[in-house]
Length: 174
Image 1: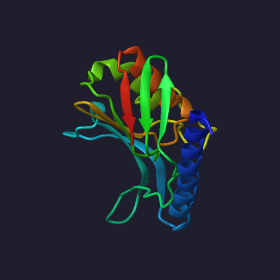
Image 2: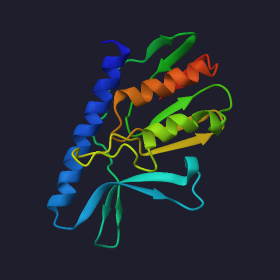
Image 3: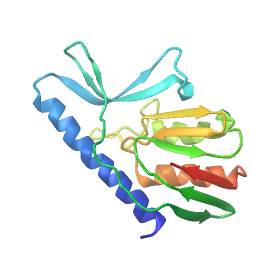
Image 4: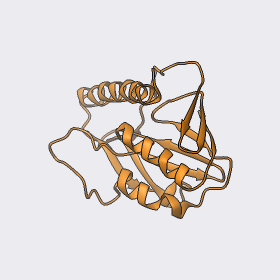
């Protein structure tokens, strides 16, 4: 299995569970909406943006997050992308942690974030069930934590290509 197939498998596993999760929330009888974008004052998340998996209109716990019970498992793999070497030991689509080996300037990720979080919903398609966007990005020194949400595989590939273009040469993905 090549790296893109592994990414597709991780995404498909998560999105399948996400569909079931949203369906269960809707069948519970409580009204609500999936993939609601919020700006959280004081949050460490990139630009303080977060997309909650399901926002209930009723009850004492309005924000409900999927806790996937399945994860794609595989033996660690080494992948080369241009001049960058990546060690991949885990791929949980809603919790991808990338250790870059050097500090990350948040400004370098601005365009990628705009495209894949789409804070202004410029690419919103009312005919699709889910947004196709990431749910959050957290930058902590040399580490990125990304909840890729319902974004396609291309979102992660574009992030990795961007990191390679920025000069990062050794990544650890877990």
